[in-house]
Length: 219
Ligand SMILES: N[C@@H](CCC(=O)N[C@@H](CS)C(=O)NCC(=O)O)C(=O)O
Image (cartoon, rainbow, N blue to C red):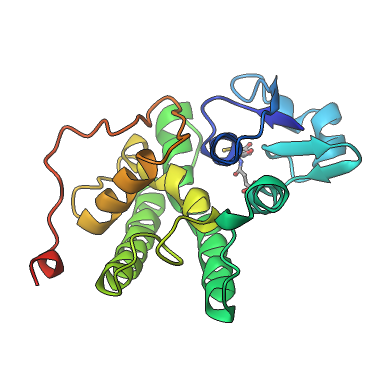
């Protein structure tokens, strides 16, 4: 399975992380995303007319959406990562997979602006990022009240992997994670998973701050 990859891309990292957690070895093909913009050149545009990475090739199959790649890898090798135990799980998983594209547009846009000097309205991108984080925090608090540490159920699914990278890297775009204790707990839980791999900026349990504290934990 070949992944067209850029080490600093959170979208590519989603796929590398899912593959590592599922025990699948990827053949990585480095793309000169910056400064070369290779993903917008004729060779890669012929694979993905949208001009984005990651791109995953497996035989004749070419996938250009990271959520589809996560579903493919899990279906092949780690079906326990699919939220398919009930209609509610299936729906929740789809809900958060769709939500993950808002994280890409807002937090990802702010990060590209701050790190690669991409043009854009940084205040609007950051405001969109904060709105998305508030929504995620509310969802995770609701889950914790129901005794579940992850987005869909009590075990991690591809929806958690789809949302995690842009959230963990929000500070790169100038958006702090300090106001969101449920997000920080969730992030720690993901970074503690067996098979977890790092990318630059996302480390295993690297937070120096004390364990976040949620009021409902005291109940
Ligand atoms: N919908 C795509 C979006 C992926 C995405 O936004 N990739 C970024 C890199 S992290 C990209 O290629 N952006 C194109 C560009 O900024 O020129 C997915 O989730 O796979």
